Length: 302
Image (cartoon, rainbow, N blue to C red):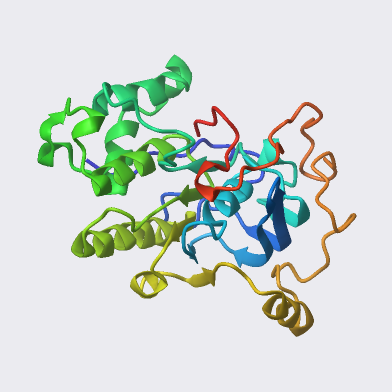
């Protein structure tokens, strides 16, 4: 069976057409001077990056560096305190969240340990409705194949409970579930934590393959050296102010070729241009807690 499944004829708002020969429709990410401040100070600051479709950006930093919070910001699940962010032409966090999907984030969308791999897939598919499922009958198998998770290698096949998965298998299941949402941007947290060295390299190869198929991938880890061979771009955290200033004066750090319109402080209510959704009720900007591992909007599942 072909591991791909057809994308909808009309891409999600903000998503470009699927690249020729690729299975996914990646979106462009442009961030400039991003920062999130919590009750005990800055979680991260001075972050600028540009990620084009078909690229793998690796955010590397120790615990407390803000790497998880940065990924949640890029996914539209956390409002930045300062800076600008555009994902697929969208600026409002609620709209960005429609084209970005989270892999497994331990403090945001943990698995139900009592549910099997099959049940987790069915739960995600159920949210798409019967019409979508009829149009994509092989979506679950395709997502597992792209994520590199072979149910036949699990102790009880796809009936294996989530609590029996190894860490790398759990990360791969998280990727598969995210792919079912057909995102333009995939975010994967802790890509190297709790995984043996050989399997870490295999996971990086999988994420690189997803990027090669057209997806925009951003993954966080602690060891930048291991990811260097697969990454298009390495972004170490924390970003020092001096380095950020050098980037600012060197040219166009967000890669767009122009300044982002509007106030330098992020304004999630600006729904001009392609980003026409109403974000007036979005409360995802709650101040993050001091520990980066818990910086998330409660209940986020994508």
